[in-house]
Length: 349
Ligand SMILES: [Zn+2]
Image (tube, rainbow, N blue to C red; front, side, top):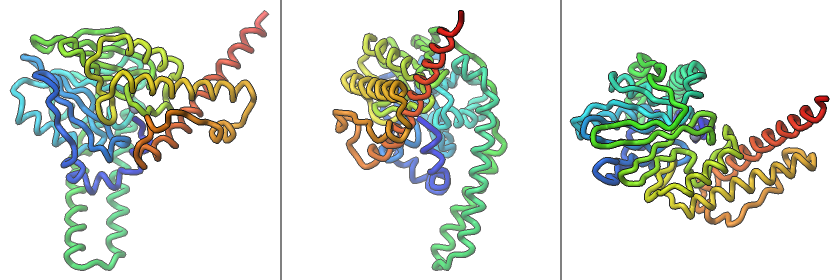
């Protein structure tokens, strides 16, 4: 989704990752597809993953931003499946989808990482993001050590927290040996892969980010839409008008199961509501640009109905506020750019 929400949880995840792992759910969707669904309470912070199995090969779609969780998933995959992991498919560059690929690259060294061509072209940026993530973990350990030394705790609590920090340090030491290596395959056109009696289609788009990959599984008419299919979408890095068009094409596609990057499976009806939400954001920003409204006025005057379709829990409400602001800002800047472009074009003699 975005590293914005994720950053707030780094410290927590480092300390409670074994706890969050317990809430990850493995759902076998059919003989070829396992959904690794993120805990509901973490749905805006971390992503779903999907394991696709052919007779010869496995493919893993996306990696959690919590490296402990990625390690646990890899361990379980090695226990459950005989086939080698041939492909790692990163849906886009956001931390909670891409960075954990470094763990998978280490644990499945013969697997080929596949990304969109646009993501490949800027890969050094994401390699730096990976290093930054490790530095943040280091800082949070140091901070927690300092806090622990100033707290007056019962001996039992003191022991518990010292143990947790020791574990966190051991994990970090392991992760510091990792690196996020360049993708082996970069795609910018629809591409088919054969996993052994199972063909899957990789669909590159530029919607949620400049370089998105979705995967379509024809055998079950399942679409792994990642964040393009999120019911409440983060649009801060999106090409908003392109996203609306992409959703149109998804609505025309034969889909029985649609798995978003975050949260439970969604229906086409939900996708239509999401599309109308994005349209509302886009229209509102367009009017704001035309009327020269400032950003604050634009934000405060945005209303969407039916809101209850998108916002059902306090967590949704928190995400909604952040995502509406990010979406409006992005749409505003895109409309502003279009206006400038029109002006430039009209001034050319
Ligand atoms: Zn995302």
